[in-house]
Image (tube, rainbow, N blue to C red):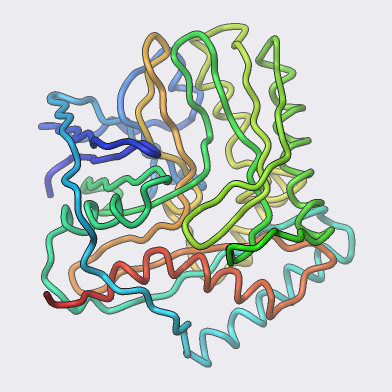
Length: 342
């Protein structure tokens, strides 16, 4: 398997391809990213099977995206797997009980669904179609022998910067976007506040001149989220790894309190997240950094694709609503697998 990554920044008319002739470097901690450069592939929880990977580009190609429309259809039908739905209900009960019992303020429950690949289109064709369909998202495709091959179209910034000023965001709460004014529930607003509070507290240890803006509606294809932005300067611009280690995973993909919630998730979720809800992107403390949380993603295998999605569980959460939220999120990748012949 070759080692490469392709990505498109939000609202960009061009894409970048990163080529490597050697295996990625495996890191045991995000703190090892201090002062480093390269394309980062980080899992939800690093293990020997899913390590933090740092690709050292030997060739970087930037080219314009071709204009046009994608050749995939939108699937309005959600999954109809009764066994998968029953399993979700069982695990939801465990997560919800832990939150209602006040062991956690919030937990994020993720699920995986498997879809058969029914066409022979190339991986790059999937990537380019995602770029057309999701122009406002960060779209990335990467492939290494250790991680496998993944495609994503994510709205969530973990960390961007130009070597001087940096930015992150608190993104949480999800609704279907129907063209009308959004009316957010208190559950969604509370979920977003948890993420913003966590980021604000974390930045106080690593950043100065922190400016917070929000809360506003951030649109992501057919979905809309609550978001607030943070801009800041690092006390030590070479300590990006320390900040990433403190930020990741945020309550948007994990829970509160962070370490206890992560341990609970690893013990109780039905399937391993691997690189879902990790983060990817280019890192350069002296140049431009673009790191995004790995959401709306799938692992592409020879005959199947493994799609991932999650939702935040609070005491006010209802099982069916959370299931439907994950179904809506899964459709971002599921729709790319439904090909319409020309």
